[in-house]
Length: 73
Image (cartoon, rainbow, N blue to C red; front, side, top):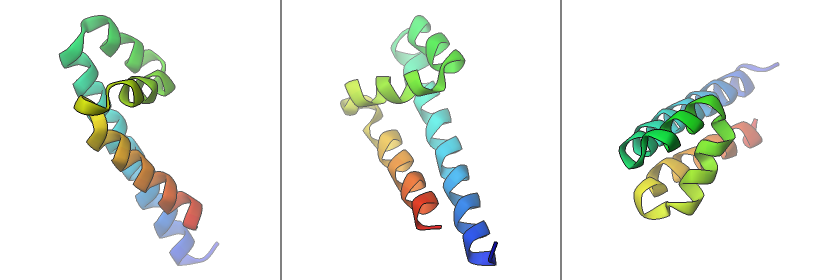
């Protein structure tokens, strides 16, 4: 694995982690049950973000950037 691939994967995973944490924060603000489900089932956090783009659009966009970085590697 080249150094650029490792850097892209690392930054991609870091942005995905940050976006998941931001989605957790937004889901906890919305409802306790949404926050708990998003914590236990991380894909559900992104489903929440897609349904509530008005509140969690930045987090979903950040996740998209993370996926693009991983795809580029």
